[in-house]
View 1 (cartoon, rainbow, N blue to C red):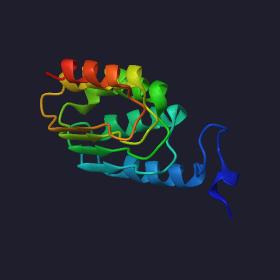
View 2 (tube, rainbow, N blue to C red):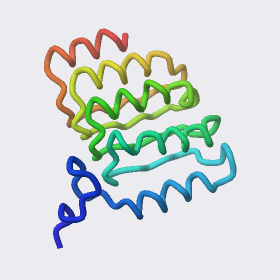
View 3 (cartoon, helix red, strand yellow):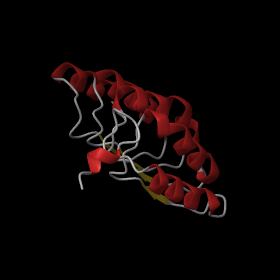
Length: 144
């Protein structure tokens, strides 16, 4: 069948609520600060799931080096929510991938501002989003 028919929210095609609950619970059940890589690629994440991501970050904040949330539906609101509360929990983060998340200029600006506060960050991936030429210029200026 068509994955879009199983939508959890109207704006998040293909979201598998049970699969997300199982995956996120597995990460939360791991011993604190034991998870170095979190891969939440193409699992239908949106603004409504960001709170659970914050819980995962809080549980493993001293260990997570790589966070890959590419190919989801965060949009501006989800990106802003993720880094607005989450950036203090990402201090060890070296790689943040938010590619292909329907993020526009305001979301990218919030992510770049947060990335400037992350001392260990080496890679920030935002490709495939809805960032305008002006937004890309502002992003580059922020990350200098």
